[in-house]
Structure formats: structure tokens, C-alpha cells
Image 1 (tube, rainbow, N blue to C red):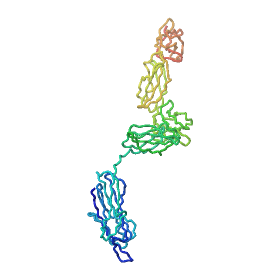
Image 2 (image 1 turned 30 degrees about the vertical axis):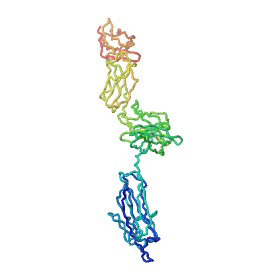
Image 3 (image 1 turned 90 degrees about the vertical axis):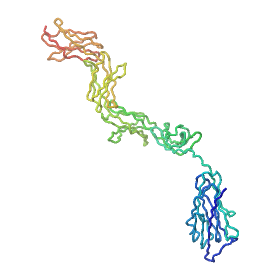
Image 4 (image 1 turned 180 degrees about the vertical axis):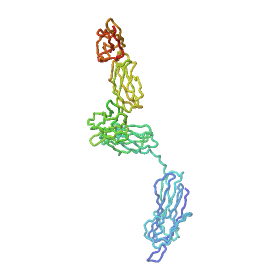
Length: 523
């Protein structure tokens, strides 16, 4: 192996205060010792290794010289003299010449019995093609027998430092760093990505159970998992282990958290009397707090529910046309669940519907819903589903007549206010049996007036009414039977103008009636 030789010449001139300057010969009892040490025991190709050269002596020495041998595979980079060596050793000067790597110290006035002093540091790098194995840097005494030196290194005048060059280990999977937090339901485990992983195993345990696998995630990009099986009040340990084939990362066993109350999931709907707030049960809770706010107000508690099984509340103080935010927070003593902050609804008052039989169909009337932009009108029968029969695009239009109704059929009607994709609630129990308005005519019948009308499908009978210009309507006859279509008024007085009308009925349901048919009895 080719060796690089560094000659270090150290001239030490010792002056004692009590005796004249003397030069120690080769056989004197003075001992000077150089040592070399490395800053690391193992290194990889391309690494930097620092070698420290130290000096100590007993007795007196005039001049010292030593040789540093650097094996092939290590390359010399620099050498730096310890700036404090001069004063520590009492030298007039300590100098280092970079070109020749020559170290010189001289002019010491008192230098005996000194402990080890660092003279300089030599920096080497490991060659990129260095073979794996041991590399020994040696510091040797170069004294000849006739030199006026007295140098003894620690072992046979030789000091050495060995560095082992090893193959760089492949970096293993990094251990995921875990963060735990209470989720809406359960506990969320988040972790940092482990480069090179195929996926992750998520484990859980308690103080009284062993680790069990909660999940195997087969994507390295999934960095979160929510344990929805965690039970309120229980303390859990969680860990995550990255894997790549049959290789596994290390894992943290210290992360722990106590499961909090599950967050109620809130649903909002417009109801007949206000906004209906519904939520999911929070197992372990004692009850619930219901809160409301608008975009310009803060949260305010509008209800305290003390029964954990009560999962609905209706805000009857909501104003039609106003957008509200609602949330529900479970509680157990002084422990509270997390809560949602984004659930909102624009409240529209439910239109109040009134149904009447009109001359051309069923007339549907309803009350105004503030904040709406229009209304949908729906109809169904006992054997059909709701179908929309009209879209009213003006919020101020509050009536509609269903001219497609069939006489004798019972219909359900409802009206739903809307604004964009927001809707009011709607009634489902408003019903009416449509009875068509009878068409009335009158003729002379002997000395009487005969009132005729068209029979109405679905009717069970008819009421016949009469009035004059000075009297109100009065019922003069009840005619039973759907097929009957006439009545003879024998009480009419000659010379009087009479108005007649007929109203079909079925139970408590009545048809509309005409008010314009009249006749003057002249016979």
C-alpha cells in the first residue's frame, strides 16, 4: 500500500530557571510522547475524518521529530496548528508550513512534566473507491541512534488510530410521527409520511389489553384514520407502523388519548311551526345544549335537553326569511363534545292551506311565506303520490285553481314555499272532495217555477236556494239523490223577480254555486 509521509519536526528548547540550559542525550531519562486519535471509529466513502496529534513529556528534551503515515484510501486535506499550544508549552513559537507539512516549536524556557497538549489537527477524507475495511494512520519516531533526541512513543515509539470504512447502510423506513385528536365520532390518528412505504398498519391498545390491528392501509399517501369504535371515557394507546414488503418501521408506543363524547350530527328542516333541529345520539352523554346564531350574531343557547334520548327540538321563534346556524353539543357534567359550526338553513314559514270547491275546479289558497320567491302547488289522491300541478313565481300570488279536478274525487293539496334550492315544510292533511258546480236554469211550470240543474257526480243531494232583491238567500228545498236534477217552486208570487241557485253536497262537502240566475214570475 502506497503511503503518504508527513514529516512533523518539533524543536523544543527547554530552559529551566534553577539550572543552566541542558541538552538531553539519547540515553537520558526524559520521555516525550506523541499520540494520534481519530474522531470516529467507522466511516463511509466520502466521509471526513479528523485526526488529532497530541504531545506530552517528562524530563527535558531538545528537539523532536515524528512521521505521520496515511494509508492509501485516505486523502490528506489540511493540517491546522492549535493556536494555544505556544503559550501552553512556553514556546517562543509554534509554526506549521503547509507545503511541507512541517511543524516547528522552539525556545521553551520551562517545559517538563506537562500533561498532554493538542498540537494540531489533520483532516482526511475517505476516497470514493476505498475498499471496505480498516485504515490505520500511524505516528512514528524518526530518531536515529546518533541524534541528540530522546523520543519514546507509547508503544515501541509508535502511535496509531484506526478507522473502519463500512458499506453505507440502506436507510430504513422512517418511524411515523403520530398525532391524536378527538373526532366527531371516535378518535382520529394522523401521522407523517414514511418515504418508501407501501402502506401502514394502525394499532390500538388500552392499559389492560395488548396491541390489536385496527386497520391495514395499502396506500402510502393515506395519512389519517378515524377509530369510530372508541368508547367515551376510555384511554387508548395508538401507534402506526409503516411497511414495505416484509420490511417494517419502528413505532412509537407512548401516544395516548382519552376518548371524548361523540359529536352529535345535526340535521335541519323547516317545520310547520319553526326550524326543526334533529341530531344523533351521543353515547355517554347526560343531555344536550342547542345553540343558534345568524351571520351577524354570536352563538346563543336556545334549549337545554336533559334527556339523552331526546334527539329533536323545534325553534318556534325563528323568523321567516332569516338564515340561521344551529348546532348541538352533548354534555356529561363538565365534559362537552365537539360541535359543528356550518349547519345553516333559511327558514320559510309553512304556508297555511285552505281548500274550496270553485265554479271551475278546486281553489287552493295559502298564507304568504316571507323570504320565499314563489310556491309549488302539489296534488295527490289516496292512491297516487304527490305531483306538482303548478309553479307560482310571485311570492304575492296566494291562490290557484285546479281546473283539472274530476267531480266526485277526493284530493289532497299542499303548497310549498321556495327560494332557489331552499324549501318550506308543507301540510299533508288538507283534503277536499271536488263537487262540480251545478248549472242552473228556470222555466214556467204551470202556475209554478221549475228549477233545473245538471246532476253532479259524487253528490248525494242538492240544496235549492232562492232570494229576491230585498231578501237574502234562503234554502227552500233539500233534494236527495245524485241523479235528481229539478225542483218545482209552487210558492213563487206573481210579479216578483226571483234568483235561484243549487248547491250539490256530499256529507259536509259542498259545491260552489252560481248567483246570477233569476226569473220574474209573470203568470
